[in-house]
Image (cartoon, rainbow, N blue to C red):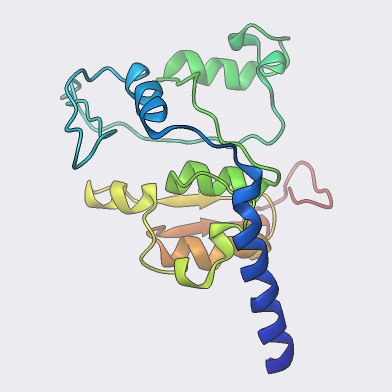
Length: 197
């Protein structure tokens, strides 16, 4: 690598991270805590150590379920029949009837990688550089795959494009995912476009 370029690139990234705070409004800490607590099912919080910590004991004690998380870019509820939208997703609607569905989970961001990092790590997107691309997040960064592996699950990330895009392959292999399936692994895909299969 060109060391001068790398230095300037790093300095520029630090500058954008410092300016990230200008994108966020200010909120009183107590008001923020009150809002978080109001949306929680837990009534009793430790106000000093973990003021927003909430846990719910598992009630399901049966056979361990398969867990499939679908990330659909730009697929709003208005296009999903089982969410009250147009009947454009019959296969997804069928899956939603067969399994558990969570209808109030949101991953925001200006790019796909921001939604991916929010869903897989629980890390909220920021105007700074994507967590998936940061050098110190390539190993030892908590992901849902780490949590599931502790419970005996095999973890897999399936992507229709090239897994190296947005540094996803390095990030996921370094943070708990056992296997990655990407565009080159598909046999005779029914559709191939510029973004993958």
